[in-house]
Structures are given as structure tokens and as C-alpha cells.
Image (cartoon, helix red, strand yellow):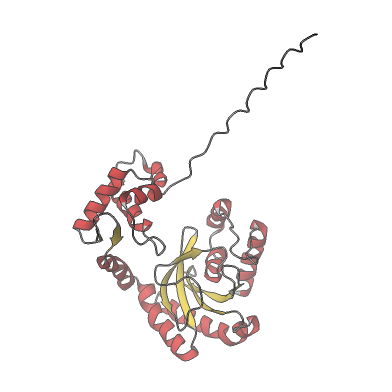
Length: 283
């Protein structure tokens, strides 16, 4: 009886290198070698920004994982923040930010002409129209709320001054993107990830380009349930004296209650008048 020789096993496929997931700490790598860059301050700011509504309390280990900083670096940052009264740990292990942190945001809002001027305008509009209004600026790929009034809860997330939302799927973001200089807009489009938040979210760069062209043509942005189901919002630009768009003002409301036609016919003029009034303070 003949014996068939055993065939050698094929070699295993080569391992695909795993690209490390970027962390907030890794964003500091581009400053390596810059003698004027204060790395310790940057690390402290990264630790501060790691605390969120979803993670208000964290241990040193949790902060290390979330930020990408070493445990030793996190410990030193927390030690300094605790000594200065900006952070603390009730049980000695789980840290949280302290009310003194509010002084930083208060310093910004009181020293920023746009934020200071916007708040009373929004409050007057809310008192008259009984709707929620906001003013925001662009920061990276997000919009940041710098003034806001809320007469009713219109979103699942609790928005406040300092809240951030993605620019591409919000009415205020669309306005700010639409009026960016061409080079800045192209840089944004080259790196943005268009995550679908609802079935209505625009996730194509070409469709987003078209939406932004429509904003420039009409002078406003209306976004219908792209960030959150049931949320419809309308935004207009706020111009500085130079003609540059420096902020945006919007109305947000419940989609079943506020139709697209009603937003355009009843509220668009109010938004534009308020934006013009706000622009006067910047001249």
C-alpha cells in the first residue's frame, strides 16, 4: 500500500499592522521640538476637556485611557488642578471638575463682545416669540454655542453655552461652512467624517457641497432632522463690518410643531433682523 505524502500547510497570511487609534495626547506630537510650546499646560487642558456630561467623574486610570496621557502625567495635572481649586476627588480616587471652572467660561463670555451682545437679543426674542434661539461660532469641525435661550427642551442633549455639535449636519454649522474662504472649506471637506446621525443626514461630500451652495444663494440654512429625529432648525449669518461672517443665529424647534413653511414665512425675518442688530455691535 502506497502512502501519499502529507502536503505542507500554506504559510499564514501576513499580519495587517494595526494603526493606533489617535488620542487627544497624540495631537500634541506636531509640537514636538517647538521651544515655545508649553506641553504641561496643553496636557492640563486635555485632562480638563476629558470630563463630559457622560463622564463627570473619572479615576486617574480612566483619564489616562481616555486622553492617551500616562498615569503619571494625569496625576500631576490633577494634583495641580486640585491645588488651584479647579478639580477634586470626594472619595480620593474619582475626580471631577469644581465650580471654580465656571470662572474660565465667565471670563470668556464677559470679555467677548459677540457673546455679551447676543444674550440680551436672544432673551428678547424668546420672550416675544416663545421659541429657543442660539448664537454659535465655528471651532475646528464643530460649532460652539456662545449664547443661548431655551423656552422648552427641543433636543435630547442638554445644550448650553460651550456645547459643541458637528457643523456639517446642523443649520448653524451649514451657515458657517458656507461662508468660509475656499481654502478653509476645502481643508474641512478633506478631513471631515460625515457620520449619519439619522436617516436624513447628508453623508456625501458632493451633497454637502450642494447644500452649502444653496445656503449662500438663499442666505440661510434650514436643516430638517439631520442631527436628531424631530429637530428642525433655521439659521442665518451674522456679519462683521468687514463683510466676513463671524457667527450664526438660529431658531430650533420641534419638527411636528414647526413646519418648514412656517419657519421660513414667520421666523426668517425675525432672525435676519436680530442678526443685523447683533452685527451693529461688531462695527
